[in-house]
Length: 366
Image (cartoon, rainbow, N blue to C red; front, side, top):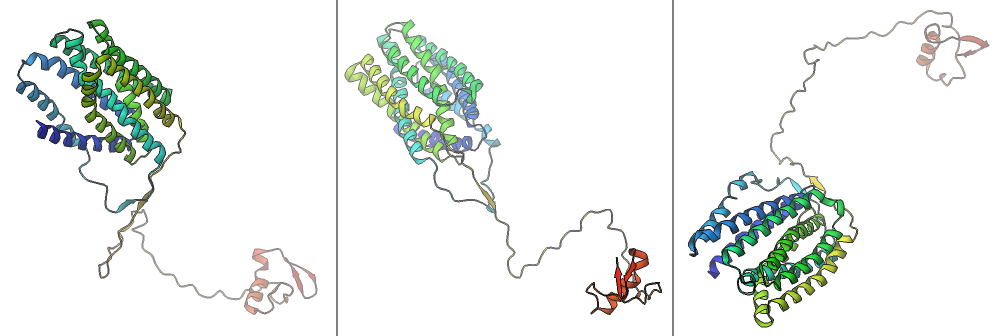
């Protein structure tokens, strides 16, 4: 069981890393994130409605989960199969927004830990403390994930209109209240209210956090690091929830998790509210340099309507001297005395190109 969980976690982490990198390269990372969470919530809701009806054995439900995972395999054919061309390199640039990114990653670890600490024991809370049946608990989870679909759709509709600080800060505070309510539930009404409200808000805040991390670096480095911190919190959450509930009880566990979320939400909100300058990726095309002794490819002929015109060489004979009224007039004062040919040409060109009059003996005014 442990080996299977490790192998599955390796595959899940790899896919999540690739997805985070791809999301960061999009024009609107938040919208792509909401679409992904929409698919996740829909599939999870279908599984929670189906698995309890497959019987008490573990083989069939796990096989159903495996088949649902294989459904994503054909979709990977639309992803790019190759890395960028080797002749294009990225300009070297340091990791931007280091303080904000590290603060967001550290906060995201505890934020995800609190969420999954409750999620890991929510079934036990519904069965033991609220006194519900397994089918009823599964139905509540399915409805909660369906409400999560509405939350994701609402987040995608709002987009960046509310910014990122308000959804992250206010959403985290409301999630803390939902965790306290769900962990203290003793009947169906309180349990369902806490779980449904929590699952409605959780994907909304998560989409804004992932979009925030993706916007901090278009290369996806912060998105990958924040996603890794979230995965680490997901791994440690169930163990934390089990230890707290076993030693202090479910209500005390919920109080501790809610207080921790309120504390963690402060730095996340500050990072979201902090103005950031846009980061650009400079693509420098590197042309292929010809190797020595390699033949140079001929330049293709350009398409032009004059390609069929024959060019004929025309020989031009020297122009004969023209006889004119100013042919004998000496030209002075124009800087042409030292060049007889130019002086004669200038003097004889008077009738054709200028109105020349003799203004003084030995001079020509043009």
